[in-house]
Structures are given as C-alpha cells and as structure tokens.
Length: 143
Image 1 (tube, rainbow, N blue to C red):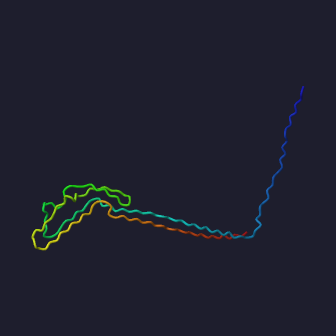
Image 2 (image 1 turned 90 degrees about the vertical axis):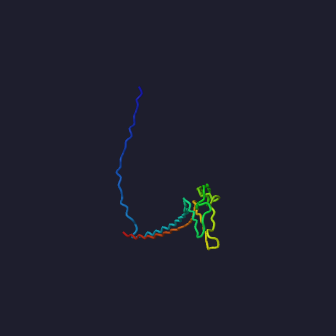
Image 3 (image 1 turned 45 degrees about the horizontal axis):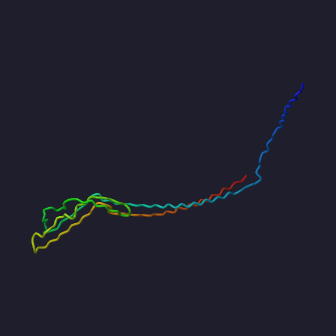
C-alpha cells in the first residue's frame, strides 16, 4: 500500500508596526498663478419687417379723374435682401388713378408716396468681447 503524505503549509505571522511620519521642514510658501483668456464673438442680425402697405395721395386744387384715390387690384411681389426672402401683396400700380387740376391757372400741388411691405431696415452687428482674468495666490505655512 502506498502512503500519501500531505504537507500542510504552516503560516507564521509576524506583527507589523507603523512609524509616524514627521515632516522635515520648518516652513514653506506655495505660490500659484492662474491666467485665463476668453473671446466671445456675437453676430447679431436684426430685421424690421413692415407687414402692410401705406399709400398716401394728396394735394390742393387736384382731383381724381376716375373718382378713386387708390389703385384697383393687387399684385404679388417677391424680394430678397441679404439672403432673406419675403413675398407680399401690394396695390397694382399699373392701375393707379390719374389726377387733374381742378381750377386751371391757379396754384396747385400734388404728392403721392407708397411704402410697401417687406424688410424696411436691416441691422448687422458683429461684436467681439475679450475677457482676461489673472489670479495670484500665496499660501504661507509653518510647523
């Protein structure tokens, strides 16, 4: 018969001791400087849009031949300003009434103006803001 031998490991534990850490300096100074720089670029586009039309006709010693003061009919107008397109309806100026002097030889004046829908004003502002920050700190310590 074969004998088997089992070896059991024997663990031997030794105690572990800690030693306090004592700094070997007496005093010190820590200086720190942080610099940051940021650039902010703003691109502002503002459009003033008139959504109706205004036709002004007037004068003295004048009258409409047709009896109307406004054009008859409407027309569609497409416009593009700085890449922005708009479509609006405007009076058909091909059919605007004609005017005549009422009293021949007398003083008269006549005026008309038309402000149509669309972009009446465009404002483009490009603004760049640079923000710089510097922070210095000093820490003094001693034992």
